[in-house]
Image 1 (cartoon, rainbow, N blue to C red):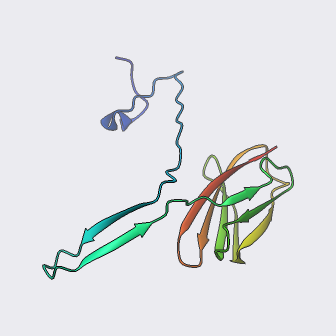
Image 2: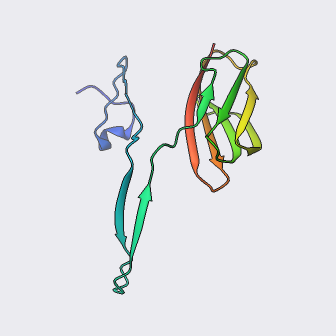
Length: 130
């Protein structure tokens, strides 16, 4: 067996020098509902329904100057942009349902966006700077 780069083998992942890894992660867009028992024996159950969208709109994508970030009619509280190496590039207090960010000074590449709505929901997306 070839040596691994770290202890990720404990979770079934082995990275060998010179190897490549590709993941195709797709969001689950299907609505779901489930019942959660309160567990107090009262017979009261909590009925929980959720729509899994969790993606903000980012356009134009790719871009070389500005991006607009929105999430329907929901009020965005903050928007953060991260480089792929985890560096925080921008944090903006928004308090509107759409926000424009100047990314003209960023290096070419893929960036991650995290936005928090006024009700505390965290939304994520990515964009390409060309």
